[in-house]
Length: 407
Image (cartoon, rainbow, N blue to C red; front, side, top):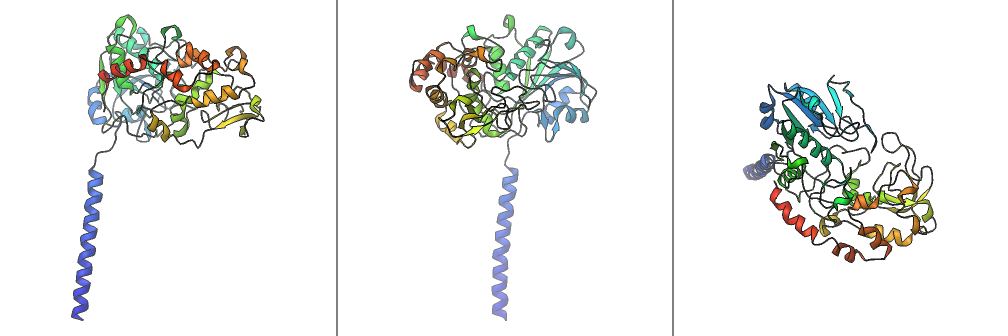
């Protein structure tokens, strides 16, 4: 009996020690600092906003926990007097490229000014009753994604009217690489305003610093910035967005494919608009008999009301299961899909003809240079196309280092 009691005591002690060790490991893991967006670190900036009339540039990605940052900051006593909404609107229910009107937010009663309607830059009158502006929008790190253009317009307005701009920074899901040709100023547009590559490798706050530092704001103005950095973040860190950044970027797969597949917006192909999986499939009716995969774009309110090849069966590539870790390995855009589909097209003369549909963009504006169209038509290899991006791309990468807030 004594022997049994001794064995029981020994086993109990071992189990207790094991449990204590597990508890210590769990506690240690809990104490390990995790990634925090700028917006989540309210203790760092709410005291600075108290007593001030605040304007906020926000959309559905502007969240603190499970609430919008507007709702969360109102509960914390911040006096938000005006909301400014970018493309898709403050609540995110407008389709891509659709102008958004001014209005009043039904939930809060706060006036909403559209920066994607009759004007893109806040006016002197709109800023008159504001002491400080707050920019809190999730970007995806791509030149033709329009939120960084909204940032530039807001910075210019703040600089012109002597208003401080606070940026609540957020991670860049495509921040682990830099690639693409540098935008030629001749192709400056609403989907590309500055000489940066397609994948710029910056967070919003880092890009704001570049706009200031390179003298890219109107009249070389400088905007007074107050940045709330991401905590425990680096550019190589995988980051899956908790909220879709816009109606057609509705999955993590789409966000990582977007830098490569959005280029098809400049071609006579449907790239998933009019489906529940935009930017992850590419095709057209004329590939019937060439590709077996098919899908049919339809009108979807708030996503794509009149997609290219609406209600027609499209044949092409299904990239929904493509291994996006390849982007991390190569640190490069994928040009092979564009090259393949051009070569396979029985309608090569229509491939880049933007006159065929109002749903098509111009390939030069998307890519940023006038050589890409000719290179594809001439049958240039991906290596030859990439070689033409130098030395501009390497110079940009060097310049970018000056503005990095994170490793």
